Amino acid sequence: MPNTSNLPATSNPIGGNLMNKTIKCVCVGDGCVGKTSMLISYTTNTFPQSYVPTVFDNYSVTVMISGEPYTLALFDTAGQSGFELMRTFSYTNTDVFLVCFSVMSPTSFNNALKMWIDEIRQSSSSRAAPFVLVGTKIDLRSSTPDVELLAKSKQKPITREQGERTAKEYGAYAYIECSALTQENLKETFDTAILAALTPSTSKRRGIFCCC
Image (tube, rainbow, N blue to C red; front, side, top):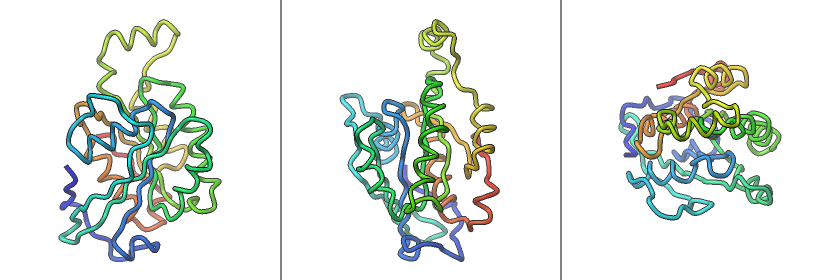
């Protein structure tokens, strides 16, 4: 799946990683929102059917950008409490963050805004890096049992419009949603992260919104 030959190369790379043609992408978000499954599905082209570890092994893939090979270094993080120090260590020299939430979990959506965006912005080693807001598990929006379960607690799935509006409000480079299970928009999610890392800072602040 990692094949991004249609992406434009940057003529003005920024940051030490990009000078070496390495893009460091760190995924953050609550536990159980599907970060690890998303990374495994993207890098192996297979959705994990068995136990998924809390933290995905750091993994690198080679992607072609306008004929130039880049290394996309992917870092998973544990969203549970008690892992704060470990997470912040991984933020050093990050080129782009994926701030993830499950569209079937309003709590994880609220935490993405109130906790995770704040955490990466407050870290001196990562505050300048752009972030992409990512809604996961979109295949469950059409799952009647899951929707009914939310309704019992007077909740609804997070809509695409909510994600897009909130991403603009919080200064995300983009909002995109995907499914690790069906791989819908999965490649596009990481393509967007790469574009965010390669885009000059002024454009990053304006942001784009690609709810594919």
